Image (tube, rainbow, N blue to C red; front, side):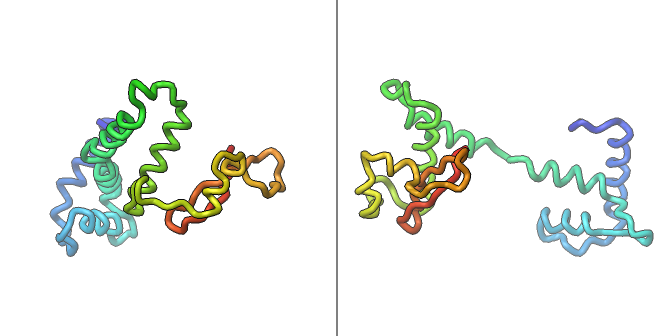
Length: 158
């Protein structure tokens, strides 16, 4: 089970059976209970529930559904259609990133306004690379629009 040996499983089962022995104060939510269990120490300064806590945190950190992945594939199917089947992976990634960024600031392609400097750079290489020479010649920089401020931000392209 989850890469645990039979000895470890037995230890976790024992810790589970001993869990009700301690009077826990944080019983309002699952997360607060397991945080308290993780911080608990006995008289020797050790946490007698450490393995159980580690297992609980591992299980609780798993996504409970595939909704986010399904949403991503849904967006991918909207972007990469039969008519646009030759889009490169980087182009599809860029379109999905822009769509996600616009959604985050509650805008869409129809209501987003480009800054005047961005409009001037369209159809030039200045829209894609920085005109400022880099101190490290092996690193290219790419100008990425900052959707919240309407400005461009330099980003390392490696």
